[in-house]
Image (tube, rainbow, N blue to C red; front, side, top):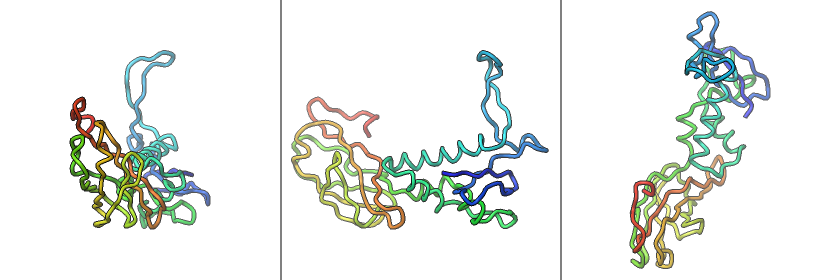
Length: 219
C-alpha cells in the first residue's frame, strides 16, 4: 500500500500513486499534537522505558500496517491487492476543510473499524462439539458478510451448505467426519461481490472421544 502522511490539518503531501492516507501527527508548534511513541532512555545500551511525541511516516505507517494485519487476521488467505482494496473502499472521506481529494491524496483516511467490519467472518458455531460416533449432524455457522454461494469447510473439505442469510449458514456434517476424536477447523469460503473469493479465519470444532476433553483454548 502506497501511503501518504498527513498532519492534524490533513495538508496534502502525496502524489498520484498514493493509495490511502493516515494522520501522522504534527509536533510543530505544539509537540503534544504528535503521536506518543515508546522509547528507551539509553543511548548505547538499554536503560529505562520512556515516551516521546513524533510525527511522520514512522507514525502513520504502523497504523496502516496494523489495520491491514487486523484484516488479514479475519481472512488469512486474502491477497495484498484484496487488502488494499478493502482499506481503500472503507476509508473515511477527507474533511471538507482539507486540501486533499481522491485525485491527489488517495482513497481517503484509513478506518480500522470499517475495514475489519467489511470482511466475512465466523462469529460462532452451534454446536461447538459432538461425541465420537454420534452420527450425522447439522452445524450452524453464525457470522457476518457471508456470501450467498458460501461453502462451509471441515478441515478444508467442502460440506453440503445452505445459505440462510448473510449472518448464518447451515452445513451437514456426515458421520464419517466424527469417527475419531480431536480438534477440527471450520472455515467458510464465498465470493464477495467486490473483493472476490474470500476464506474466513478458522474456528475450532471439537469431537469428543475417550482421550479428548474441552479446554478453554479450543472453544
